Amino acid sequence: MRPGVLNHGYKPGTKVLFAMIRLFSGRPLPDAAKLTFYRRDFYGGPAGHLTQLALRGPSQWSVGDRELMAAVVSRANGCSFCVGAHTATAELAYADRGRVRAVLADLATAPIEEGLRATLRLLDVLTRDGSVSVGDMRTVLAAGVSRERIEDALAVAAAFNITNRLADAFAFATLDPSGYAAGARFLLRRGYGK
Image 1 (cartoon, rainbow, N blue to C red):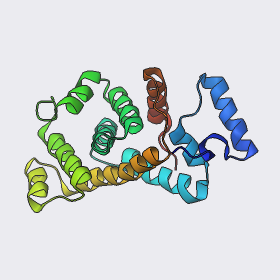
Image 2 (cartoon, rainbow, N blue to C red):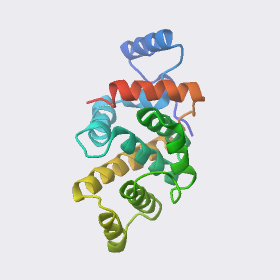
Image 3 (spheres, rainbow, N blue to C red):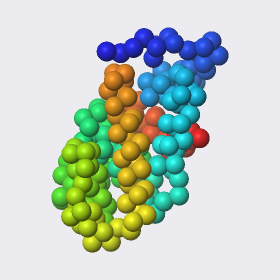
């Protein structure tokens, strides 16, 4: 059930900001962004900081890799809004729609390096099963993925396991392809907040 707060639970200044965004962008603010403005001290600020660190902080993974991880975790959780948003952002970050679509269609045959493949498998298993085995972790390490890269990937998974559940609980509206593309451009230019 979609709570009314996403539609009208904001202070007047925030409502003006939303109206300005709509005026200049030609589209309403996506629900994910709206949620960060409601009780910003409780959710929006901390969640934005966590997601910014996980997806844009220092890492040996590229931004495209981490956005792809967010899409894979979101797909495992069945979160349509986040799959659309982070598929579009990964495609734009890589400048390679085919690569991202191949990973989401069949990870086993996708044209990606083995370390990324093993890491994406790990995140998929962790998200679906809620745990991974020592063998799962050894497989990722054997593919040449460092402990630091594994920790960075797990941070992405943590951020998106939270975000996916909120997106589904608050019934975030899915966007059309142009809406996801606009969001992707914004996320690559501005990130997730501090």
